[in-house]
Amino acid sequence: MLHAIDACAHTNRWRTQGGPMALFCAGLMGCALLAPPLAAAPFVAAAASAAAVLGARVPAALFFRTLLVPAGFLATGALALCVTLDLEHARLGFSGAGAATALATTLRAAAGVTVTLCFACIVPTAQWIALLRRARVPAVVLDLLLLVYRTLFVLDAEFLAIRRAQDNRLGFRTARVAGRNAARAVAVLFLRSLQRAARLERGLAARGYVDRLPVLTPPSTATRHTYAVAALVPALVAVAAVVLGAGQ
Amino acid sequence: MHIMEGYLPVTHAIGWTAASLPFLVWGVKKLKDRLRDDPEARLLIAAGGGFTFVLSALKLPSVTGSCSHPTGIGFGTVLFGPAIMSVVGCVVLLFQALLLAHGGLTTLGANCFSMAIAGGYSAWAIWRLGGAVRLPPGLTIFLAAALSDLVTYCVTSVQLALAFPDPVGGVAASTVKFLGVFAVTQVPLAISEGLLTVLVMNLLRSHAGEIVAGFAPALKGAAR
Image 1 (cartoon, chains in turn cyan, orange):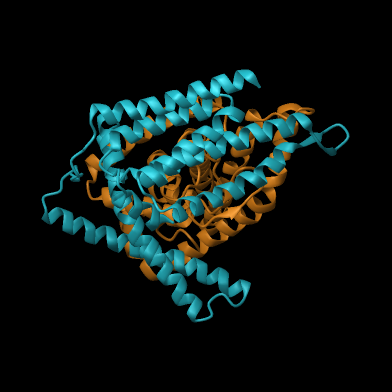
Image 2 (cartoon, each protein chain N blue to C red):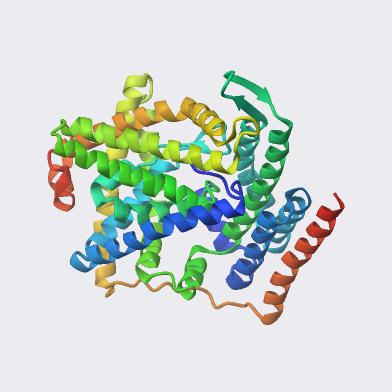
């Protein structure tokens, strides 16, 4: 999932529209959080999914498959909200009010997850970090973000390779051996991360790195028109949600 | 274990973000100071962030709109201190929200408070306390990693209980309910993470003691 989302963000059709997409997603997220969830959530989820799949041409299979994992967590989480606990009699029971809360919360969260995934699949990391720079987030944090981003994929690949090698040597055949090998994998990963950091440091120092890591982003193709559309769609969703919400 | 995107009402999301901000501002200041004194630590801290990300990406489903995984915060806090680790933890949570659909942007403040701040500072307090009362270092590391996990889980349960009070028993009953359902996955996980951290420290000490002690003197001879 890690590689798929990142690759998608760098190859989709709207990858140079970071500003408008941030505005679009912020607007939709505002609708998801503030408008009545029963009315707003379907519109928000539909708008975010359409933007990602139809607009930016994010592969539908990837987008909806990625949504399945949080959807599973939400479904199980809804059960806990439906249950009420009477501490005096130490009794569990079903609660109608809890079920209503569960429905509203699950819908709101599902809409929110769809919007965040839409943003993650469309806006490349370097672009949202550039937006954070414009928002005057401290440079040291942005630098840390970029450096962590550079190490994530290498370490993820290293960890998978270590686990696969251990698995091939029957490293997980008993719980005891599995525990010891998990610790070995983590220790080796930690040492590899230090080695990678040292190599990265040498490489960056050779290029004159002091305290800022410039990253070139493709020139933005955003226009006033795209900003207007990006603001208009969430506004329409909000109006529709408020009108429908008032009628319920 | 992170609260999902959009799960908290907007006032709670803003409230937890506001509660996290002073700690993050302090953490950024400490990070700047550390990097001014030791610029080479920049890449080590970034590597620590990547390490925490990979470690905490091992998810287990839970039954409270959340999921469970080793946090790596206890380990990171012992290496870098709680203030810097709160910033690193926040960065890791941001990447998890965007690249793994795990946690969320609107719940970043709440997750940061429970995992990076409450978890990190409690790990540091246990680590220092263990040193002060001369507990065996291995036991101190175990307690720091395991209890910081449990503190994270307790704070997340309280966050969820405040957002969703029980219709009958209120916040107290809701807290008990969330603690109960999280306990199924989180208590064994906390013990596992504590044991894992001790094993990792032992391996690092026996195979790479000089390297580790070079940038984290506190760990020299730590796990025994």
